Amino acid sequence: MARWFTADLHFGHENIITYCSRPFASVDEMNRALIARWNEVVEPTDEVWILGDVALGPIGRSLELIAELNGTKRLVAGNHDRCFEEVRRAGQDGTGQDGRWTLRYREAGFVSVLAGPTNIEIAGRTAQMSHFPYWGDSHAEDRFEAHRPVDTGDWLLHGHVHTQWRTNERMINVGVDVWDYAPVPERTIQAIVDSELQSQDTRRRLPI
Image (cartoon, rainbow, N blue to C red; front, side, top):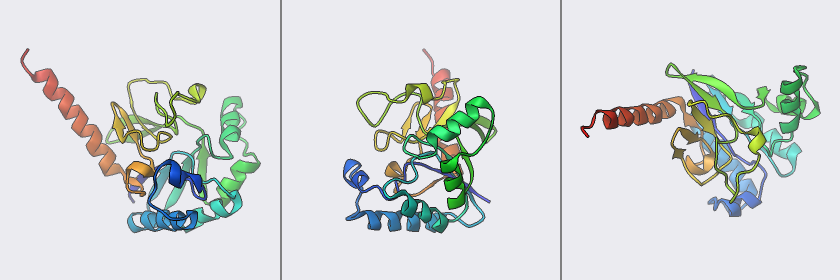
């Protein structure tokens, strides 16, 4: 079993084609291409974490597309996901109860629907996952500051910023807009972290 990460698919969202200069002539073409590129790399036995903003547009038809994606799918909700406020409240008050929208997402094919940040271990190191980065945005100002993860010094996998960067210090944007519209394998995330740690070690060893 392999593990993959992605974000910001925006199934059914026609305006995202213009907003992010996606190379598709229509929302239907975009939807089909995202599904095809996902299934080209993800096997049915793999696990995929989607870090928010999976579907917009006519939500019933958009969510139906989740069933066409290979793998065991887990969602960390983003600000455009209809279940975002539900999973946040369930986590804050300790009830853990699924609301109406959370159930819809589970029925669509997610085995878990979570609010970020969530910890994960990659190559023996703890990393955080959230839809939001520590700082930065796809807009001119940082939005949703109350929902952003606390920077504890860990690496962070995130979405939300679309085309602003692929990596930025200890933040790795796994959004489809900077990864050729396909999920990112865990081995690639590990390679990015290892490369940065090696660079840091080299800089520390350089003579002054």
